[in-house]
Image (cartoon, rainbow, N blue to C red):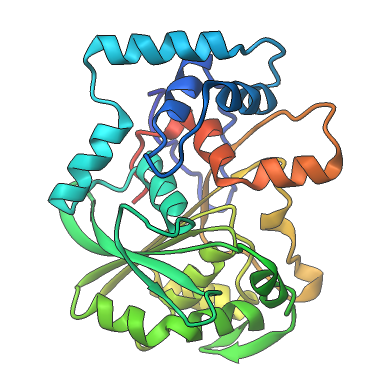
Length: 308
């Protein structure tokens, strides 16, 4: 993959524009796990939207698929199989996207699924490696997936939690599976909370819950809105050993809860990848610029960079 994670200047937001190589984008799409079968035609259409290219034919995708198969190189499906067998994987950007995608699946192939009776709060718990060889328990929260989730997302008022105030809906979702998640973490010394969209905000709230007693807590999020106010963000900075986030430049969701409503983003913006959806309607752009598939394909330039 292209390059490594950029250094971040103190006090400044780091924004890295990634120019996507077409072959890398195709390879990323061909690496979908078996639970997400994508035809060559669907892959071509989505890459055309993400990359702003007018000629991404299904024949080109099929050709690239044959090249990968004939090269004998291990593809993402095989890598996923190995990760499932060993129960361990380094938490790079590609694997973070994979885990976030798995959280949306009814029958995930990674992690143990925890969910509430209403089905609005869902998390996967598994093992990862960070800092090269440090074993950590990972908890990946699902983002919004239906009307019940959206109603919770719409609870914009803040409620006291810890040293500050947090989004009432996100806190409620965390509360629905809190005891089960804490039990699954057990006595792990290092815990990583992660998630896409609202799942990332829930990860931030979970990280500052006093019930989580791990000595080291890390957070990695994709497309996450702010979880609370400035006081909550300050508590997150004090509690979380490493807190990183990635967002697509055109994605409005990370900006939906602004400061004038009393919210403040937390964590270090390590990359702001860019997509181009020229000619698409605003609603279509919102849908595709926020999708987890878009984050994986647009982020191919940082796919092999360690997140934590």
